[in-house]
Amino acid sequence: MTKNPKPLTKEYITSPFMIGTMRLGKWGCNMTSSEIEKFVEGCIENRLVDFDHADIYGSYTTESDFGSVLKIRPDLRNQIRITTKCGIKMVSENRPEQKIKSYDLTKKHIKKSVENSLITLQTEYIDTLLLHRPDFLFDPYDIADAFIELKREGKVNHFGVSNFSTYQFDLLHGIFPLISHQVEISLLHRKSFEDGVLNQCQKFGIKPQAWSPMGGGVLLKKSKDQSIIEIQKQISVLSEKYNAGADQVLLAWLKKHPSDIVPVLGTSKLSRIKSANDSLKIDITHEDWYLLWQTATGKEIA
Ligand SMILES: NC(=O)c1ccc[n+]([C@@H]2O[C@H](COP(=O)([O-])OP(=O)(O)OC[C@H]3O[C@@H](n4cnc5c(N)ncnc54)[C@H](OP(=O)(O)O)[C@@H]3O)[C@@H](O)[C@H]2O)c1
Image (cartoon, rainbow, N blue to C red; front, side):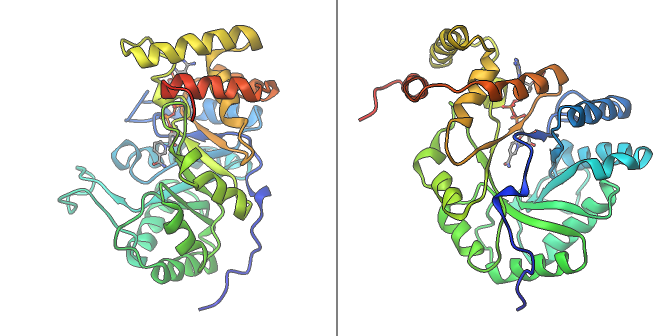
C-alpha cells in the first residue's frame, strides 16, 4: 500500500467555525436556492468558508439543494471548502434498497457514496470526507485503500472521522493520516472532555470539530426542563458579565479548550453567524468555565 503523499497539519482548517448544512434543507428551514446562495455569500463575507454536509441530510436531498446553487454560481466553489460524510445508510424513499438503518464503511460503499456526493454537490472534488459513524465491522486497511484511491483520483483531498472512539481513531490514523474528528460537544454533551477524544486531537495536532454546539438549539430556546433552565440562568449571568449573547457564551466555553475546538454552527441566520464570529473576542475565565461545567453536571467536581 502506498503512503498518502500530503503532510497533514493543524492549519488545514483555517475558519474558526464550520457552517453546518443539516438544517438548511428538508430537515430544517427548507431554504430556496436563492436563500442558500445568499446564506453562502454571507458566510464568505464573514470569512467562514467551511461547509459541513453529509450524504444523508434532508434524507439524501440537501447536498443536491446546495449543489444546484453551485451549478448556477460556479464562482462560489473556489471560495469555500466542502466537507461531506458517508457511512450511514438510512431508510429513505430516496434509497428504497436500504431496508434497515445500518453503517457501511466498506471501500465499495465509501467510493460509491463519494461518486454520488460529487454528482449531487455538482463539484469535481470534495475537500474533506468524514466517516460519519464507526461501522462496527470496519476494516481499516479497506478504508485506507478507498482513501488512497479517492485521493489519487483527485476526488477527495483530505479525510477524517466523526463519532469514533479514541481507539477506533487510533486504529485508522495509524494506517492513514486523518485531519479531523467531529464529535458532539456542548454543555449538554461533555463526554469528549473526559473520554480522551479532545486530548487525542491535541496529541495529533488536529482540530476537533463540535457538532450541535448549541445542543441543537435546546440551550437557547425556552425550556420546561429544570436542568436546562439552571444552565440558562447561569449563562445569562455570564452574558451580563461578558456583555455577550447566550450563544456567544456557549461558543466561548467551547473555544476555551486548548484543543482549539471548531464548532459546527447549525444556524440558518446570518446574524447568528456574525454573532459567532464576534464571540471570538470573549475569553472566559478558568473559573467561569468550571462554573458552567458545574451547573451543567449539577454537581461540584471531585
Ligand atoms: N457528525 C455528526 O454526527 C453530526 C450530527 C449532527 C449534526 N452535525 C453537523 O453539525 C451541524 C450543527 O448541528 P446543529 O444544527 O444541531 O447545531 P446547533 O447550532 O447546536 O443547533 C442549531 C439549531 O439551534 C438554533 N439556534 C442557533 N442559535 C440560536 C439562538 N441564538 N437562539 C435560538 N435558536 C438558535 C438554530 O435555529 P436558527 O436556524 O433559527 O438559528 C437551529 O435550529 C449540523 O448542521 C451538521 O452539519 C453532525
